Image (cartoon, rainbow, N blue to C red):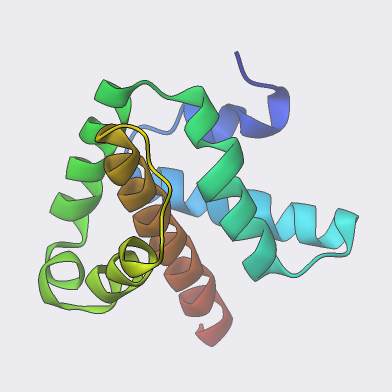
Length: 121
C-alpha cells in the first residue's frame, strides 16, 4: 500500500511522531529532488498522503491533530492556515472533500511548524 520511504510516516504511533516523520521525509526529498521543503510539504500532505486514506482515517487523524494542537486549532495559526485553504474557490463533489482538505492543511501547518522549530533549536 505504501513504499519504504512512507513507512515511518504510516506506522507512527502518535500524531506527534507522524509530524516528525513527515518533516524528516520532506527534508530528505528536498535534498534529493532540489525542491523547496515548503513545496514538498504541500505536495506530501495535500496529494500523496491523502491517497492512502479512507474517510474514517481522515476524520480520526483530524481529531488527533486537533487534540494534539488544541489551542492552535481553535483560535490560532493552524485554524488560520486551514481556513485560508477552505476559503479559496474549491470544486468539491462530496462533503468529505472538506475534511480531507482540512486534514491536509492541518498536517501541512504542523509539519511546517515542526520544521520551523527544528531550525530555531
